[in-house]
Amino acid sequence: MLAGRSLIDPSDFTREEFREIFDLAHQIISNPEKYSKSCEGKILATLFYEPSTRTRFSFEAAMLRLGGKIIGFSEPNSSSTAKGESIADTIRTIECYADIAVMRHPKEGAPRVADQYITMPLINAGDGGHQHPTQTLTDILTIECLKGNVENKVYGFCGDLKFGRTVHSLIKFLSNYEGVKFVLISPEELRVPEYIREEVIKKKGIPFEEVEKMEPYMGELDFLYMTRVQKERFFNEEDYIRLKDRFILDIDKMKYAKQDTYILHPLPRVNEISTDVDADPRAQYFVQAKNGMFVRMALILKLLGIY
Image (cartoon, rainbow, N blue to C red; front, top):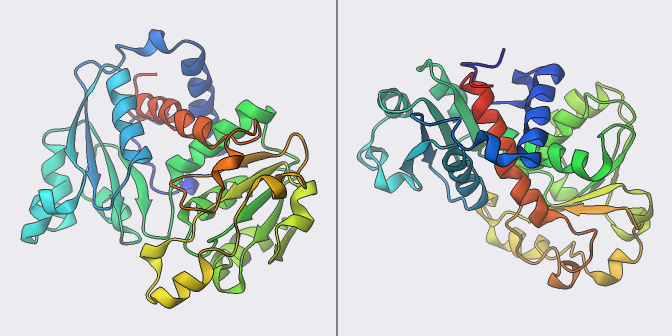
């Protein structure tokens, strides 16, 4: 049972428990009206200490489409955090008013700390460069919609693999499935962290390659997961400027890909995917964004014990 649980890290739930969420999400996609009043009388609190468009809006849209209500803040200066209030006090106060909460925070581990002080479900909407589990649910749902399953696929990850929390979460999740292979495309300075490489990929015996060019590998990929180079994670702006344009996917590079190689991106993009790719039917990042609402609807229903 997922009722009353929190989702902070992809390892918090078993494969079977995630399967419950995905199955419900597929049902919601097929018949959203059936669930339109499921959360009447329930309140979702959104605590966003970092800017967000898709994640915050998709959570809010998910709760509203389920018939519930939302409270919260979209940046910390509009809350008592600006006065020096601790995360512990903030979340304990929020629990007085809400049934479930979502937190995004720039500090790694902050949602895990907050979860220790409450009994209501808490969902990690991204903590620093660490994890982003609900984006991973979005990604997996999209992969299932496009290919039927996630097993026996070659996944390419391109761009900022060092600070990209969406990449870290998705690699951890996919590592639990048979027949997956990773092609990790990045400059040396932005390779996946050692703990992901050693404790996840190598520990589970997953075949992988770390490369610095995109084109030679496009033809073997089932999915290419593009990411932006994240300016906000850099301490040195010169390094950011030097690296930000290393990998740009355009219509010419798409010619190297298979006809059923799909392009994903957690968004926002800057310039790492040229807008001329948007018209290609293999570009699925805006469909991916919509799927984020459906899978978050399913997650809310499960954690509240309604389904």
